[in-house]
Length: 107
Image 1 (cartoon, rainbow, N blue to C red):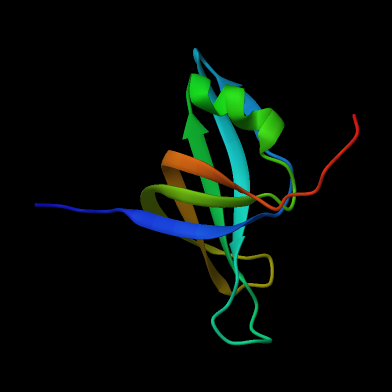
Image 2: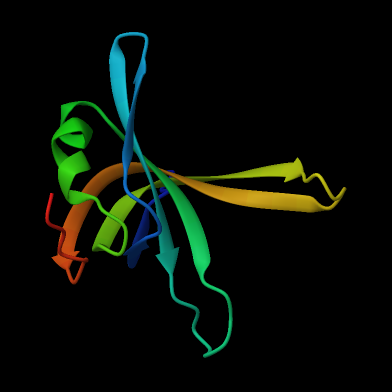
């Protein structure tokens, strides 16, 4: 049995954006999860929500919005411009819940 399920609660670092890839749509957004210790940097997760649900949620996924995200995580390693090894955590989102607390905007 394989189980790869991640649940995070955090805030969006920027407004979500849509991308059309061939005949599918993906909604991209980044979530910052507060560090356990005060003064530590937050952990960042790159999230991808595929399909119509992502398209419908884009207007609500704004910078500062608190969210609970569930999905499958994959870690990608790469060499940064400075020559150091880096890693990113990418989440293929299966569920996202808006928790409130985002900035109100007049548009």
